Amino acid sequence: MKKKAFVIFVLLILVSLVTACTESENNTESEEVETINKIAFVSDQPLDGSEWLVNLVDGLNEYQEEHPELEIKMIEATQVGEFEPKVRSLAEQGYQLIITTYASMAEATLAVAEDYPNYYFGSLDGTIENIEEYENVSEFGLNRTETAYLGGVAAAAMSETGVVGIVGGMDEPIINAIIAGWQQGLRRVNPDITDYVSYAGTWTDPTTGKDLGLALADKGADVIAAAAGGTGAGTAQAAAERDTYFVAWDTHYDEIFTENKVELGSALSFFDKLVIKFIESTIAGNFEGGKRIELGMKEGVCSFDIGPESPITEEARAMVEEALKDIEEGKLTIDTEPIHK
Image 1 (cartoon, rainbow, N blue to C red):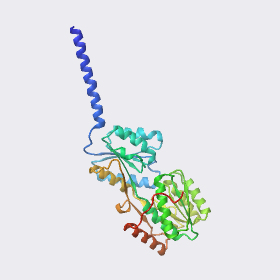
Image 2: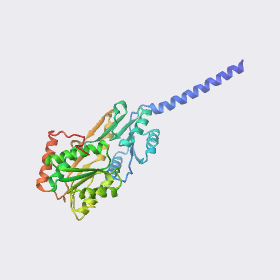
Image 3: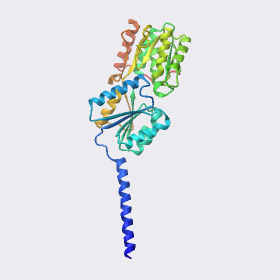
Image 4: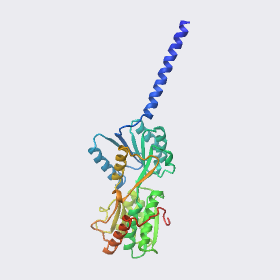
C-alpha cells in the first residue's frame, strides 16, 4: 500500500514538472512586450543588391549608433524556403519587432506572427489582402504615385517624339501603382502620348534592364525610365548608350551618365527614413495593427529630385513645379491602377 502511494506521489510530481515547463514555454511566446529593444529587418533581396537597400542599411546602422539602447539586426533571406525559418528564428531569439519585405515574404510573416501574438511584425509593402485579421501585423510603405506622377510630367514635357517607355521590376501592385502615377503624369502634359511598359521580372539583373531599355529606344521612345531596383542600372546604361533622356527611381546614376548627361530627375525614396519612422512609432506605443500605413512627400520619405546637371528645360521644370504645387494643395487624385500595362 505504501509502495502504491509512493508511486502515485512520484507521478504527481512529474505531472507538475511537465505542466510547469509547458506553461513556461507558452509564457515565452505570449509574454507581454513592454519595452522594445530588439528589432530585426529581413530583406528578400541581397542587402547590397540595390541602391535603395544599401541606403536603408546605412541609415539603420547610423540610427543604431545614435541609439545604443537598441539592438538592430539586418539579414537577408533570398530563397522562398528561407523565409519562414529565418523569421521564426528571430522571434525565437526574442526580437520583439520584426520587419519583412514585400509580398514574397507575406505568407511567412503571417505564419510566424500567428504563433507570437504579443510580438510586433511590420511588412514593408507586403500587399496583404486580409491584414485586418492580424492585430500584431502592420503593413507600411511609400506613397510613390506622387513622385511617379512628377516623373511622368518631366518625361512628357521633354519628349519630342511623343513616345516614352518604362521598365518595371515586377508586375505587382507596388510597381503598378508607380506605373499608374507615371502614366497619369504623362497625360497631364500630352493626352495623346504613346507609352510602353516592360517588366523585367527581376530586381537584380542589369543585363535584362539594359536589353529592355534598348528595346524601348528601338520603338521610338526618346525618354525611358526604370523602377526596377538594381535592374534599373542596366536601363540607365541603355539611355546613356543611345543618348536618350532617362527618369530614374530611388537613386541618381551619376556614375553612368558621366558623358551623356541625360538624366532628367529621379523619384527618390528614402526607405531608411520610412523604416525608422515605423520603428519609432512602434516603440512609442503607436503600432497600428491590422492596417496599411502609407507615407509620402508630405512626411519627407520621398521626393522628385532634379539634379544640378539635368538637361531639363526651364519650361519643363515649370511644369513639374506646377504639378508639385497641385499635389501639395490636394488638387490631384492619382489612381493606383495603370491605364494599361
